[in-house]
Length: 249
Image 1 (cartoon, rainbow, N blue to C red):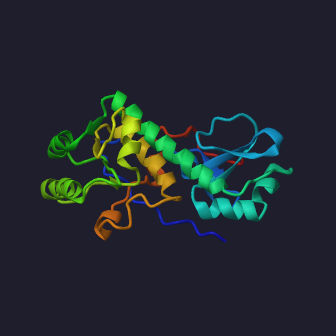
Image 2: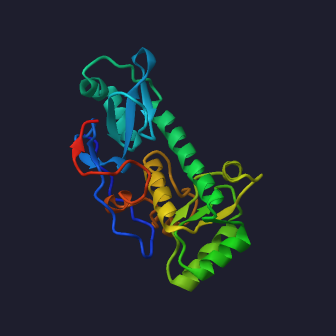
């Protein structure tokens, strides 16, 4: 049986509103009842092929699985999708890989929304200014960026605020650039609290599929979580979080 991973630490959000209770669903792999924002929905597409529905918007009956690779593979191998849907479905190999790609795209799209809302500092000088003004709601560093620039920003944050910032380093400078309308982006910093919670919820799901901070970066950086607590996901806006009843779909 897949064990639920330990709760990821939440980013430090000053003055965040008291969250509502999130709507809950039952994971077909583990049997646990969790907030929607900690799971991934699957729907049945054409020809009975199971389709990841990471935005939870597709019509028809669906099933929910804890947002990590192990749970999805368990549900696929052990027939959990078909049992829950009460009918034959085709759960293709590589389903977890497809979910990872879709969640990564969702995270990058969220960054684009923040840029258009003026809720993102981009580039070394803007990020330095943001850090001096208040504790970071989230520092985004390109995985292929130079180590000295990255370390300078983290040392600055520790020096000013006596703690490292919540950190994400799982996207390349080219991926970040495409999301933010530039050729390449190395450094970015989240500025708006509610949007930062939405980003944290999506990154928290992606963390079940890839390392959010590269293994080559210092261990102390990886100890700083980026995902939300269950209390925080309700206020993130990353999913429909009204109500509090455990549901199958």
